[in-house]
Image 1 (cartoon, rainbow, N blue to C red):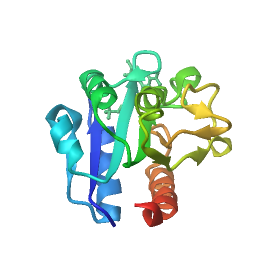
Image 2 (image 1 turned 90 degrees about the vertical axis):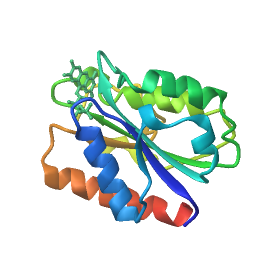
Image 3 (image 1 turned 120 degrees about the vertical axis):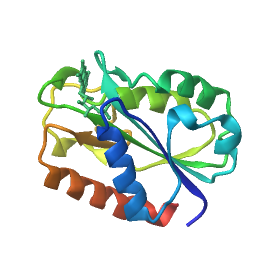
Image 4 (image 1 turned 60 degrees about the vertical axis):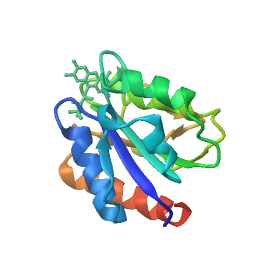
Length: 165
Ligand SMILES: Cc1cc2nc3c(=O)[nH]c(=O)nc-3n(C[C@H](O)[C@H](O)[C@H](O)COP(=O)(O)O)c2cc1C
């Protein structure tokens, strides 16, 4: 596997836990809060695994606002990017995991290769900006589901992307 970093934004720790789970399962030791990341740091990595929880009404986690501007200005061409998002499909069914859509918008025309889209039909929710052509733009984690379901979703997602990293 090429050089990989997992970057997250998390207010109460859920997205951080998912980030750490992903990193541990991939055997990646570089896991950073977006507040501690700058463009020079990202330039050192071939693979970026970027995750946010969702706040407000389908919006990014707070620490990501500056991070998204940094991503837009960075040279990401040639990199491989996988996204993940955390939300609550029961409590916020109309804007489920919407924060991940803002990450997607920031990187989709960057020249990076985007991997790790997930079939949206396996989730129960009403609407999400993070779905494009029937697929979540990355791994969507529903914090209203049981821990076991989350772990299975993470495992399946990792099985799908690890050969690409
Ligand atoms: C005020 C508030 C607004 C939220 N808005 C959304 C939302 O629009 N969509 C969604 O999927 N989840 C929403 N959530 C759920 C959070 O994304 C969820 O609790 C998540 O686990 C928080 O992760 P974090 O602790 O890593 O920040 C909201 C939660 C709160 C408290």
